[in-house]
Image 1 (cartoon, rainbow, N blue to C red):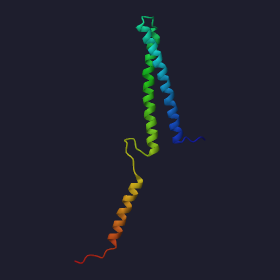
Image 2 (spheres, helix red, strand yellow):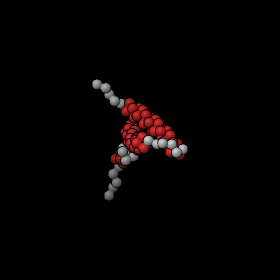
Image 3 (cartoon, rainbow, N blue to C red):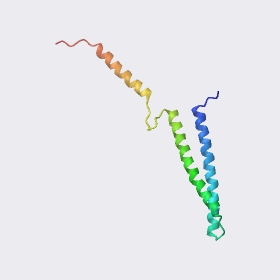
Image 4 (cartoon, rainbow, N blue to C red):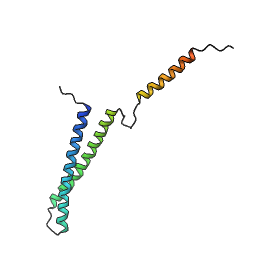
Length: 114
């Protein structure tokens, strides 16, 4: 059985995101070539142009999903909840310890006479 660690999950997501960004760059160059053809009055293959434009929209959407997933992975690894909240357990432990110390000191005092 293979264990998937958070570090491996993040590395895989970063690799996927990089690959998607490269694909978007390739498509951008393809669309720029089509634009240059159109500006120079050349013949444009409408099917190829529409296909390239459709791919861009799909890839941008996929990139956004992968970026969101990658951020969620990083937040989970850092202990940050989905809403952006995190528990600082060390600070909570210190505060609880201080309050317990105060209660102990108060418990050691002599009772007040009526």
